[in-house]
Length: 527
Image 1 (tube, one colour):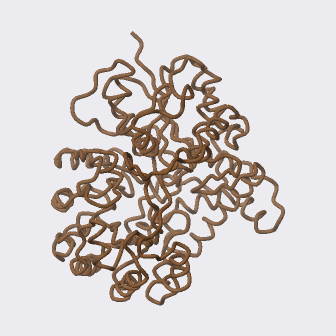
Image 2 (spheres, rainbow, N blue to C red):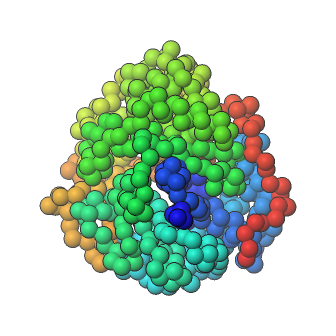
Image 3 (cartoon, rainbow, N blue to C red):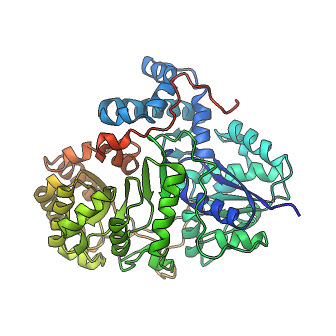
């Protein structure tokens, strides 16, 4: 009996710096169930396809960027580049310049991290249907039409699965599905991913995509995928499989290996938390299995960096990693807890390979933090920042403005906190709050046809501090403050937190570069 064969696709456009974690887990589950799998990272492949033949440049800067495009791509894969911030910035801007040139030829805004079509909204089912019906108009069509045809025409594929996690992927995802349905009308197509999960949970499980997709999956896709194929799942959590993607030329100085030690969030008490609103349970892997899998993957793929993609690393997991290191440098999201205020514990984390922690501070106002349900004590947060700095672990902090409880006074308290702790925060992300359209909320307005998939709703700030005033405060006061401006300048353009660990690591930890492509490398993909 022939083994089942599944085609898994990671569509453009997202940061092209590491393999897709969700699909590598699916690939591992399929392998454990004795099925075959082909995993296509169309995001990095599509990027290289476009870069192979840049459009004709009309100015000197664009001509230089296009003429040296593979030099710049190679620089973003070299550890030496991350020791020279100006060289790094030039490489990022050059690649973005070439992508922007391509985008203009199709009337879209295209970059390393975004895809915006003024005529097609990823929030409109009608516009996604237009992308589905007109795949030849998509900028990536010359790439994905040939790529999909080479695989599907063999007649061995039993099912195709797409992972849609960000709005920047939506238009390309439906264009690829539309072409695949033309190419193989009888081939079942499953659609899942983080964005799809949010859409479905807010729609109470009803798929808005009609016959464009055969099955839409909310949450982890391993179970529905294996059930569709009538395969018996492997007991426990199978090892993720990176065989299809480990050698792809991601724009990082070595393989970044994403790994999820849990689904959901262990805290789940924050106001407007999607994990709680969407009723996503917290499901951690057993600690022993987590460390065992990390060590196995590290030995097999020799990553330069491990990216722990959990919503928040639990204190229990951090303790286990400190006691039993995975064997490669690592980073991920965590919460401010008393554990991190312990200098000895932070030293142990650093010795175990932790180079950076992403920490959601959100506000310097105790009132805002209490109303938000963040569980953050600012005194403990300050001690944690100091302990992490002493241990040599970089902090990528996140601040959130314009929440329903924030006034200008609260925002100034956040600025005061930054002044006090400026020396302990290496990187900083500033965001303006959007009110989620929570499932089951009666006050969620009916969206227009062009915004039927919106995850947010309008609201009036109870404190009277309007969004335009918040943005003005951020632009004219907060970002320009001497305690904040230097930190913001540390942020890697385009790649932000994905590349921040490479600027936080000591140089010797980045010397394990992959077999790097020379500047004149030949492009593997046909045009």
